[in-house]
Length: 125
Image 1: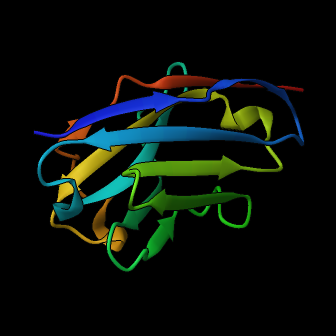
Image 2: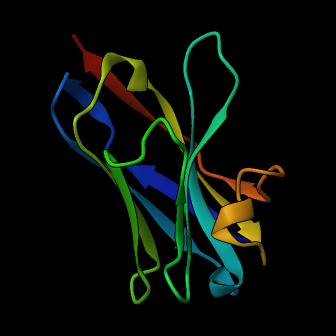
């Protein structure tokens, strides 16, 4: 079992920055690749970014490349998503996710094993 708790969402103006965090707990957290997904109103949930615990290999959706940065603190078992140059279309509920023994490049291919409760990010124009 892996528990994921997000924090850090909020309201920001277009062009601004925001960082969301995901605290992961469980006996075998290091066996999981971590990622962020988002779901905007009326749209399907989509992959945003992923990172492996060990080597820190990352993967990003094309829509956020160059603007978002995923990172992890292995000691604290926390994953971060730093979001810069935010756009109104980034408005969504952001979900932390974990998938057992996959790679960052495959994180968005199959549904994750665990989800956090989500945190709202709203970007005003």
